[in-house]
Length: 415
Image 1 (cartoon, rainbow, N blue to C red):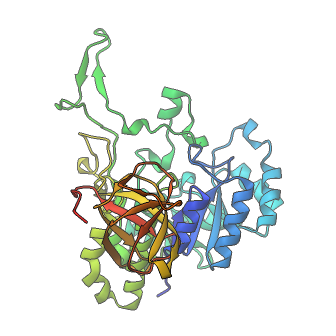
Image 2 (image 1 turned 90 degrees about the horizontal axis):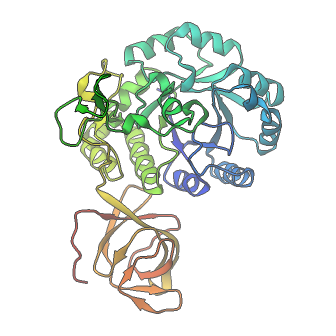
Image 3 (image 1 turned 120 degrees about the vertical axis):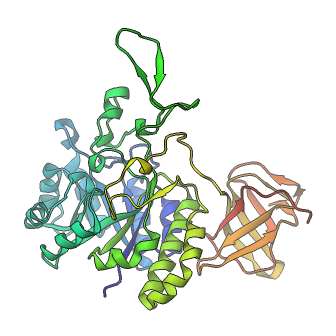
């Protein structure tokens, strides 16, 4: 049984480093053009080169997205962009538009072509067609079940890889082909500018009674009729492998470093445990489920994998995330002889707080903040300023880029 690839989103160079540190086999990133996450930080060409070099130094692959559905004007500059990518040597290019695919074949034939989920591939015949066009990997549509994916695997050539989303936000539209954002805000989801109107609250208005808003469902906060739960397949690692999925894809190029670290580390452990011994994986399932909830998320669903979604797959009363932990900082150095961690603060914490360091090997090291110092040695009771560089005493070895988090529900404790 071949070990699957763990493919992690990286919306920035910082997130790429975190993904690599916490166990990604591959990351996918977007440049400042031609990708489907226009509102993400994305990568300048300089950062893209740095990220690809860093990942390759650590044995991790990098795939670059160019998966917009292009209009005529969008094609200007595609060839030049691909020629710039050529020198950076990414491991794959993710496309959805046949025209962009054709340009990629001409400009960078040495780089693997991966077909985005935006291309709506739901059957083996269409996947075989794309393989004949030079596609090495297909990201299957999210609307497929285990049974359908297994059939596709049996009816497609073995030198074509199948990739599938296994965790993250679900799009209410068919494989992400959505027109709501463009219609309502003139921001095109198929060009990466989605405003996520599926997360908004809606009411019913009758044509002859303008201004009279009637709730679609009785609830004082309205109803979020398009608001899907998040996908989570951490309990089905074995089924995903048996279906013939080569790459397990995590959604989230606009998510935080805490999200990237948490999801990467948890799926890394689950995959490794399963490959070592399925009984070990089954034993550790409660741990994976507990850990995966320690970053922001909505309620979880298995999407289309097990059965067609019904009304239970939507969240009707809120569009907010569940946040059990807060990302408070990242280690940037550790002075062992002083027992002092140098950290970059991300959210407020105070002396007396109980914090957790996420070790790359899966351990969570809990400690109480005994003191906080700035770089000049001045003590302070709290750390309210984002990205301030601070020194805090910790009596355990910590490593660069390890994430520090705080449980939301906790009350400050006496040091």
